[in-house]
Image (cartoon, helix red, strand yellow):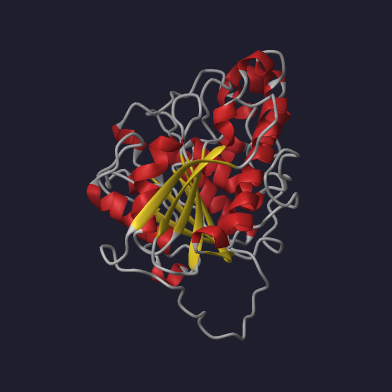
Length: 345
């Protein structure tokens, strides 16, 4: 069912989750065997902090190479989740730890990397494209580290879900749909890891914070931190769950400028983005929001041939999730590999 902005605004909330799984599909196979899962309250969770997943790259702040791991103390092996926090200019891994711990209580080993913290003395002198290329390599390193070290924490390296919220959702999408290789300084095997699931929550890729001037100078930079140019469902045989908060109730709408090229012309330059958004009913006098961007992302994935799923989380904004929305988010992450068990609209 196609959702217009008017169709979703009646729900006060949402969240964007993209789930990516790898491996060959088999149309003749029966239902996949259920993954192990714990009832919350039946297992204890231990959190190890400040492990090092990369070290020695002077372009990144030292805190950007640290990772926390929340894991059940009960023997597994449990499926693994890599959880990317939001905008690294304002938050770090501590911001993601409460969600990571809740997911671990369901029988998941959760790696929570600090990412995106650039060394200011380096980043001030290089273009945005170069900065973002570095970040996608760091994102790939975090997933490779989780796979290499999953067994150390009772995890199953063959079942990895990648999740992120806001800017972290962009990281999750790149981890699943991009093609970056881990940093040379990565404390893991240097090869790229394709996860079994990716969860992208309230991605802000089409709006971005403070990117307009840089995008105008170099429109191609948009593709450095977004996967939209090289979508390949045959290479990524996984379900994609897209959830989004109803940002129409918060301060996240952007008005459409008189020169709409300033907002749309430098984003996804391979297509007429404004026309696609208008066709979906996502442009009106109220402006364009993160919610609209996620509706577009879901439809783009469906049109490209992905097994994409949509979920609108109730009574929430980009900055504040309701209790029900948090429950639905955790449920989706836990069951990301098996969408038939995950909530969806």
